[in-house]
Image (cartoon, rainbow, N blue to C red; front, side):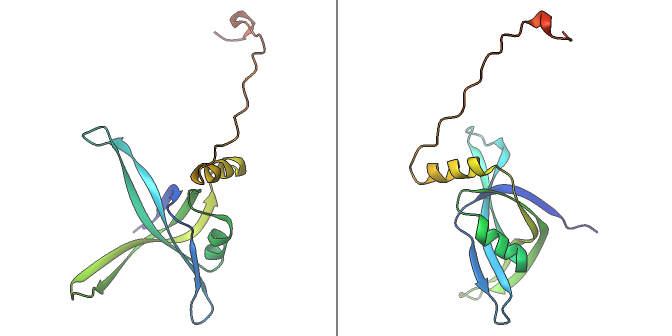
Length: 140
């Protein structure tokens, strides 16, 4: 049997780092992931996935990621059952992260941060024509 989740998305809010009573770091966050297809009206659907990271992974996420940053998460799906305030039985699904990683360069992350703060990103470098003709290419 296999329970493996590999996700890439953007954080919906800043990660929240806490400590258990025993001093173990735990970080909760949510990522938004666009579905690969559009709905009936041509509108793209987005899923919001809750993620929990523990120990060093929790500290890594809390230190280096902020709202809007792209993040890669490798972990497993877990469920929890609980009873809400009205006495209804509920089930929560979440991904427990074994590892988290950067999926964009620092410049891209800073650009998305500036955009999320209402500022414009720095202009991208323009491409330069090196004047190569098609017949100069070794393949056609």
